[in-house]
Amino acid sequence: MNLYENCRQCPRNCGVNRKSSLGFCKEPESIRIAVACLHFGEEPLITVHGGSGTIFLTGCNLRCAFCQNYQISQQGMGAEVSKEEFAEICLRLEEAGAENINLVTGSHHVPAIAEGLEEARKKGLKLPVCWNSSGYDSVESLKMLDGLVTIYLPDLKTLSSELSKSLCAAQDYPDRAKEAISWMIEHNPLKIESVTKEVDGKKVSKDKILQGVIVRHLFLPGRFFETADVLEWLKGNANGKAIISLMSQYTPVPFKGSKEELAKRKASLSSIENRLVNENEDADLKDLIEAYDFDYLFYQDLCADTEWLPDFERKQPFSYALARPVWHWHYGWCE
Image (tube, rainbow, N blue to C red; front, side):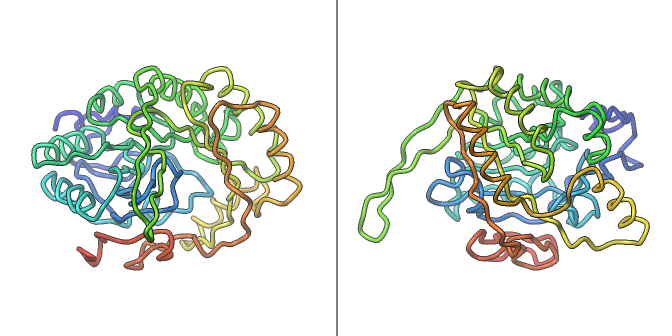
């Protein structure tokens, strides 16, 4: 796969030969996956009735100091799969009732993912595919997914180069994320349908996204003006064309790692207040939402519960209320 020999898949432009070395993402040319599951914790348009068929890929092209998935994004937890195995995982998720295939953090593996999706389509996959990314995507790579992916679920973490350098090791994150999100919106106009299912003898209708963009932003404690800047940009560039998802569930993670790794992470986290969001901030965020009056916005209610934090060493990384595992990097098929 020539695109791995001088890797330019993401904005890092490492130029590393991933056939023999590892790039910034710490991954070789082969896809590695940690977990595939039916996930019920995504936005309602994504989970709908059956849950989102979520595939957590190993590695990442960012180093977000607060990452709840750090075991797989930064510590390499996962197992190698071929394109045929990747396709089989997609098909098993479809059989389990998934509403879509939700690919989490694949920006460093676009060519291999495209091959895997093409293989899955050949074998009968009919579900829409969702690209769930940090937003640190290359437009050139996104074009390789055009026609294979119709739903985009990018983050817009911050518009501060200083903060993105400190927290994510990517000073150019704001510019690259704005470019990528603008491309996603331009090429994927919203298509939403109502889906009815009988639940406990009653017909329940829910909206389901088939195509379009949902832009996520996680409020960082103590950084209210960062969120105000992000919403200002989204109001001017995404309102009416994409859905906004404002999240308030920032949670300090009980990280494990070497002393050196933990010290580096602590230094990065010093640029924010590493704590749960408080009620005053929640009220301020609600006032901000009301002031901007977006056409379509989700806001996650404040929750002090930290039990939802995943542990990918477990066969069930999440609570059973949040997810149902189908495949695990260590245990294999979970059904």
